[in-house]
Length: 476
Image 1 (tube, rainbow, N blue to C red):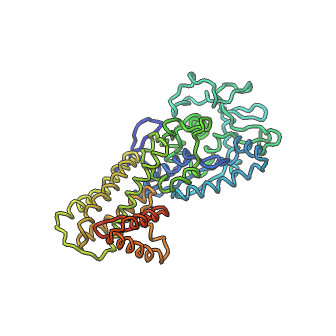
Image 2: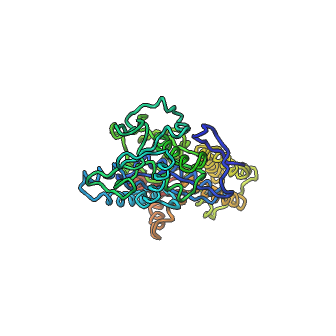
Image 3: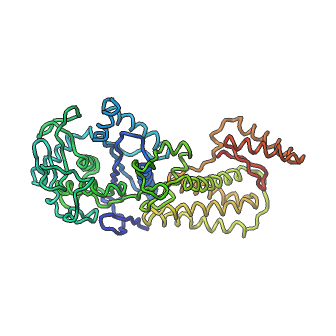
C-alpha cells in the first residue's frame, strides 16, 4: 500500500513518490536558539520525528536535515540585553535543545547545519539571484524582487496584489516593492558581520534554509517541513528564491506543515502570558507523557494544551504502559490454567490484522490517533485474555502481542517497556516484603494499616494493584 500525504502546495493528499526509489530526502526548519524551546517547537519536532520514524519503518533510507538559525536579530538583541557575547546564546540553547529533545525520545537528525557555517553558500546564492535579475543591491543591502517570480503566493494561497505591508513585512524607503525581502543586510555598528560583494553584513532569514537545503539535499528533494506559521513568509520566500535560482519545480516536491498549539483554547503567545517552555511542562508531567500528548492529535490539526489535556494524556499513556507491563508480568508468571481455544481466538484474530491496521492509519497522511487506537486494541484484548490465566497457547499469543505492541509504539517514539527493569536488585525484594505486610494486615482486618502502606507507596511513585494473580506493583 502506498503512503499518501497532504501537500500544502496542492492542498490535497498526494501519493508519496520519492525522487530516488527507497530514499527520502527531508528538510525541516529548526529553531533560532536564543531561549528555551517551547511546546510549539516541540510539536513540530515530534511530528516530523514520527514521520521520519514511520518512513524508516516502511523501509526508506531517510536523510533528515534540520537547521539551526544561529544568527538572527533575536539572538543579537537578547545577547545585548544580557551583556554576553552573541555566540554564547546559540551554543547554550542548542545544547538545551538536544537535551530536551532527547528526553522526548526524538531521534537526532542526520545533519544539523548552522547558518554561521554556510555564509559562502548564502553569498553565492544571493549573487546568483542578483545576476539573474531576481534580486537587487541597494547600498550594502540586497533584496529579492517578489514580482520577478510569477508564482509568488502559490504556497500560501495569497495573491500578491492583495498582500498588505504589515507586522511581518519589512517596510522602508529603499525597497522597490513593500513585499520585497532582504537576502543580505548591511552591517550595523556593534553587530556580527561577514564580508560579501556588497560589503560587510549578514544574511536575511529566508536565504539560510534555501542554501543549506540545496547543499545537503540537492534541488528537487522530497519533503520540506515545518509549522504552519512558517508557510508565509518564510517558506513562500524560500520557494521563490530557490526556484528563481535553480528553475521552477526544482526545490521541494512535498510541503508539509503541522498545526498550531493553543493554550486553554487561546493562541499561544508571549503577549498573552500563556507561553510555556518544554522545561516548564516537564516539571509537571514526565517527558513520555508530553510525547504522547503531541502524538495524540493528527499532525495537521490544532492541539489544545492545558493541565487538563495533559492529565488526560497521562492517563491514556499509563493505560498503554500498564497494558505492556501486564503482558510482561503474565509472560513471567509460572501459574497456568486451562484456557478454552475460543478465549484465545479474539486476540489471535486481532494479531492477524493489527499491523495492517496500523499501517493503513499511518499510510493515510500519518494518522497517529488511529494508529494509537490499534495499540489500545492490543492492550485491551491482552488484558481480557490475561484475566483468564496463562497456558502454552496464551503465552504464545501474548509473546507475539508484546513484541508487536513495543515495536509499533516505537514507530511513534512511545516507550512502553516495563519500568521496574530500571530499578536496583533490592527493590523487588523490598516490594515483596511490603506487599506481604499489607496482605497480612488486610487478613487481620487492619485495613487502616493496609491503606497506609498503599498510600505511602503512592506518594513516592509506586502503585499497588490487586489482580486475580495477587497484588502487583509498578512505578508511575
